[in-house]
Image 1 (tube, each protein chain N blue to C red):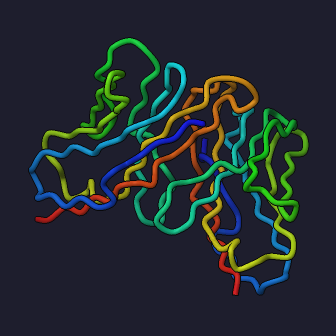
Image 2 (cartoon, each protein chain N blue to C red):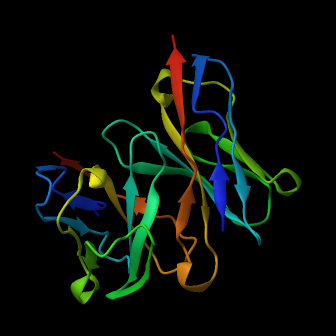
Length: 114
Length: 116
């Protein structure tokens, strides 16, 4: 078990460009979460999946954001037409089915929009 | 809506001293509470969790936390701090019902600095 992995670890992009991040959860975990963390703040929930079904999206997630989890394995988070306010650390976590099982976090993808 | 408040943004202690990090939560039902630690360049690591039962829970690295329902608090403690404990600490509450089941709401974090 290698834990949750995220790719890339760092991404610098120009305003208006599209970016896509990938998260590979722990293989036996059927829940996958995305959070966003800005400097000096705790992580904020964005969305989560139970297997391939996206069960909830935060109001923080504008129409420019989309997430997928095909076949209930890895997940992608895409941001279209990036804005400077999208600069943040994007964290992925996975867990077993139970809502209060430990969420295992990946190292995050740091996005900088210039 | 649930919320978590960590009143102390930054705490400095000497190595070997005791530590208490404060956490207050707002949640309508029985809360599921967590403490995570984040070191620079590292992912969040779970220190301990509370669901029910004994209100004093033990975690990894010598940490413990006490759930006090009357005070809506879940403070993290360690009797003797080591230099390697320097990191940022987050308290979180899990949503236990509906479509938000399992979603974590985090506090803003407390940065711990340890002086030798």
